[in-house]
Length: 302
Image 1: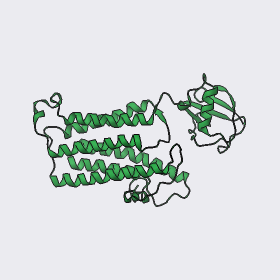
Image 2 (image 1 turned 45 degrees about the horizontal axis):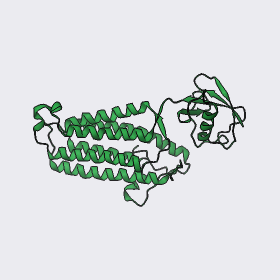
Image 3 (image 1 turned 60 degrees about the horizontal axis):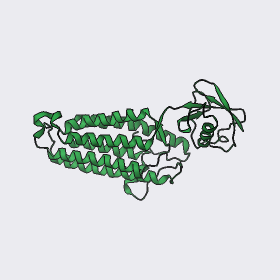
């Protein structure tokens, strides 16, 4: 079939391209980039749609499946400079690790003469928890996660790093402060146990999600529990990885009795709830047999 390629912003026609009806959107982007090098951005910057302001088409959509015919128009939107998802994640998670440990060393430039006050056991435990969490995230980014998209807009790098790095500085300044007062150790040990449980649960879910998608593919399946009992949360919610992560940060807040840590937990919970609701909605649209009893992120509630 022959399609007309149009710039979504200017409505200017780039030209026409002839492709097989079974061509998918990912391949079409490559063909458009190759044929219209001067008129269109590179393939990784393209978002294809059927209307100038319409919804972006999925890479797995085919022209036949979209019911396109000869003479139809496909609009190309420039997404701007792109950067790899893995690169963004590594920057997001490496920064907090460095920032937290810098405050943990109690620099005199920050804390003045009080920097020499002995560090409490709770502060040491909190630093260990923060380190474990972000080292885990770095290792998961390198060895576990399989990304459905290879790139994201470059502007996201600055937005995401500002959030993670800035909140880390806010939390670590207070937890590592010479005047930090630890709650009772019973509270600390109980919260530490819950933190460890949630971190293991989060990791277990990430492994289960990884195994759903064969290497080098973009296959999507209904997530289900595997042999690990920590993945049984899939029976109740669509995004148990977010549920566990919220639990981990609430545990950290209880462990330290630190208001900035609690604010970070609430901010993260809000964002992860938004993501979970979106994923839950997409699962239900994509899979007709998706379990009806599941909620998005909080069992029996939401």
